[in-house]
Image 1 (spheres, rainbow, N blue to C red):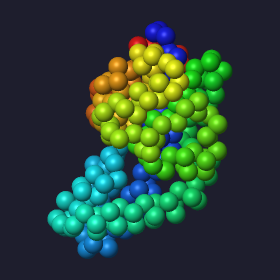
Image 2: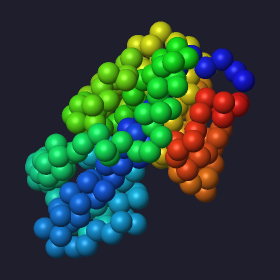
Image 3: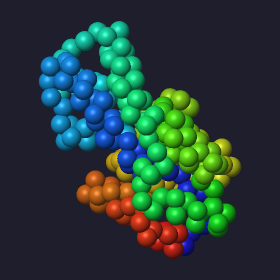
Image 4: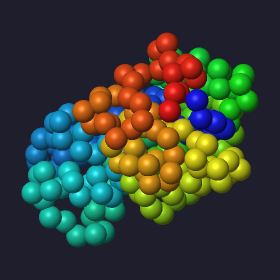
Length: 215
């Protein structure tokens, strides 16, 4: 097994499932604009920034709006989403995540968050997970979206760890590509069909341990 000094976790879909709350908030916005937005449509928004997500949604509804209106709508969606996440509890941490993080800590492996979410701190606080992370990089710290590796490279830098000694945990194709672009190993959480470029793909963290990080 190669040396592993740090593990960097994406947030949505890896540590917690906030996709359902994003979906409810986007669907509500689409309905307000007069069209439907399905769960299948929502898959296209995974790991994508808020404004790009809005552009995709408007494309689905064939709605054209000026920039000022788009900004207002993006803000409205975020307000709706925040109402949901402010009700989150530690019970919503995905199964096996805390156990795996505890193992990492016991073995002296550093832990970072690398998420596009601008609400990451709010979510971590609601989940009572903030103290598990040695470094947190979220959407407020980066200017380039995945597959650009900026979010992961900043995490490695804060941890003072060489990217080649980092393992990224991701559930989105763009995130897997970002890890590869940052010269890091990657574990895909989800479907091998979507995350095939990752070094390893697992359905989740239940029963997962460092022993399985054989690269």
